[in-house]
Image 1: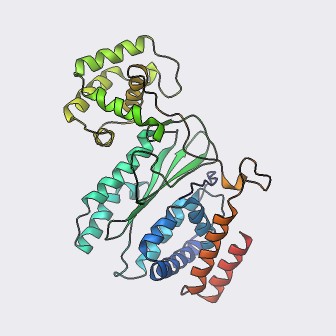
Image 2 (image 1 turned 90 degrees about the vertical axis):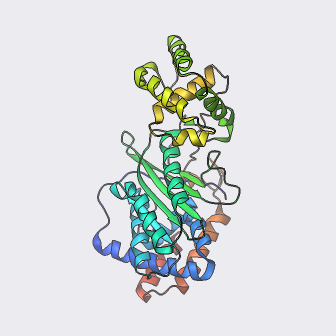
Image 3 (image 1 turned 60 degrees about the vertical axis):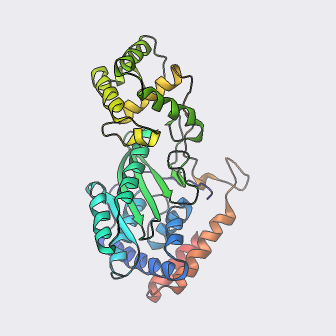
Length: 353
């Protein structure tokens, strides 16, 4: 799937009740027709596509540039799904703030409803959130997490982080596509209007750094502590970590906890309770300076597709993909069970796009 990016400046306030009610009804109608015509996996694939997801938000009522599109659209989809009855093979879990924390409870309820083991889904939900908060250190803190899955094990994730200083947001999207390596270039898209140097431990180029970090955890904890002490005496100036960032006593205790957990892979390492951004940044520095395996500092986000131009600067507009998304939505709107007024409004928005 081609990675694309949209712009997400922060906006205050929330959708008015009348608009959210309309969004909920439109989302329910579109969800129903897409599942009937194309199946649940196609719906998940579309929701994980940044361009299509943004287009859907435009159609059901939000401006293209609003960061609130992510949280409000996910909420409208969740409530719209509830209007379709209990037989729809789709679960939409989590949401914004406290609802994000309750994602495992939502997943469990669907597991009980469908009579399936959802422990793997809960583990995936937590791991992907941990990756975007800890393994991709870009200055955006997650505050929204929506996990969508089906009884056959397919899933998609839409989560969003906020940078309080820049007053903008960054959206992270995932899909359980064939060949997915969840710790190496796993996203279908990361959406933000700014790019920067980022400590990206899930970049393909960070493979050696990931292996080195795991190897280091096999050392005796006292030796791990000594290695860190030696590094801090001549630590280079790096944007992603400095001596002042680290509580040495806490880090040394974490080294022992990690060692005793015996992680066999980077995925296992990430899953250890207490391994956060500071610990991961310290391990990245060890990988770079001791094992000569530097991580990637390439930002996985790209410029907004809205900045693409007919002259090809900074990159050409992906017109075929864009038009395909619009045509797909036009077909769905035309077939969906919606009132004439709602269809006219939706088609008008698609025409403007």
